[in-house]
Image: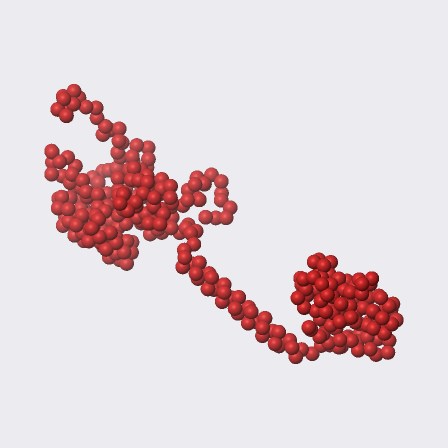
Length: 197
Length: 168
């Protein structure tokens, strides 16, 4: 919007969690952070990753919504669920391959990152991108991201599902698409692990 | 969503429950209020126009038109004519030897054409059984709210000349 694009680069994330706090400051959902923040492997590494919603071209969350509550605007932003419609069924939470939507059971409503719609729709930067010190979350013009060593990609494969997104992921320069099959990450516990547990 | 969808372009559910805000056909309270306001404004302007037109029509000058000859109508007979325009059908009834009455043929209830009922000497509307007096056009029975408009006639020898319409 307004010539800016969102770029996520987990390799730059230093785990400061500024984005979480900045997101909580947003007036539309004060006190609730919509950032998805992960420690990749808490035991083995300090690596962390912060994600915003990827705003898919064909959003899975909206497609599975039985109440027609998740809508995508003409600017490509997938909005939080509409309060009068959302029935809090969590279908979107389970369906989203990125794990973005958040359910608030006390409110019976799903809320998610809407790329700070009140800000970005008038040309301001989203809260998280303004505070990120390492620009792991960057909201810049495409020519400003071009000098980076990584290259932006917005094609994802989750098994057989192909997803193209509005938000870009910074990937190694020789990578075209990000592919992830859940089956690759399922492991069978050995007896040694089980005995420890 | 186009009115006629092309088959096999997209799944029907994607079309009917589109995820795009632009395809939203939900009518908000504000839209409905706007519609109500504009519609009642339109009705108000329309009523004003009808009122103004009825005021203007009061002083309207009617043309003179020869509508019938006395000898062509027997006692108890009728003659149909159009006055003041070809679209305004009228009925001339000879109820007595020297009694000629002309009325608009349009029933004041729902505009069906009335006919003369000789046996009872009244004008009958077949649609909802409305009856008018054949002598003065007043309502005798049934749903019509007003008497039939009378066509004012002037006799010139054997000819009848319509000179005006008297409503009410």
